[in-house]
Amino acid sequence: MNTNNHEEIEDVYHLDVFLAGFLFLGGLLLGSLTGAGAMLLLAPQSGKKTRRQMRRKGQKVRKQTAVTLHSGVNQIKDKTHQVTTRIQDQAEELQQHGQDVVEDQKERWGPVVEAGITAVQGT
Image (tube, rainbow, N blue to C red; front, side, top):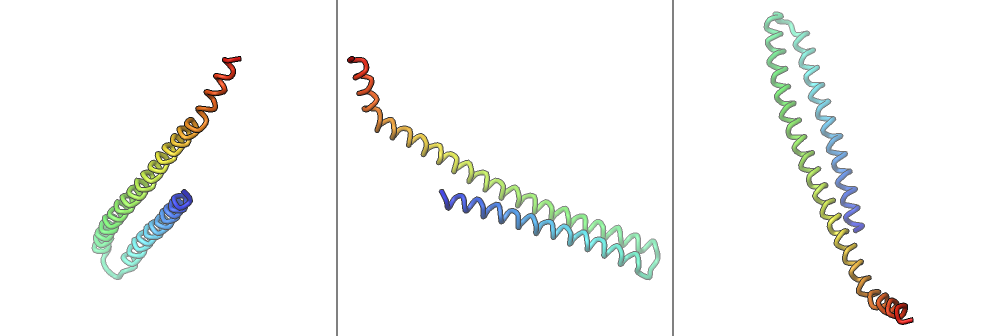
């Protein structure tokens, strides 16, 4: 049981690290988009050509961001499913263990209770 708790804590830690990396990647993409926009605005060329380049770069970064976000969301869903499944399995194991303990105690104390009932009824 202790190792399972440790595994859960480790899973949560890995999920936090993953989310931090994911946020860093999002910031990196936003920074690259901002840098590309600044570069295009400061480039020595016509406004029409600059706007066209900005539009293309924006579309490219938007597509890359969408792909990255989709991948990140899928990874988070997978990890969440793994953690949820593990917790459900552990809950089922605990429930079964509790039922086993109750059955063992019934077997252990059943004859004593029966003898007590018989003794009370016999007096």
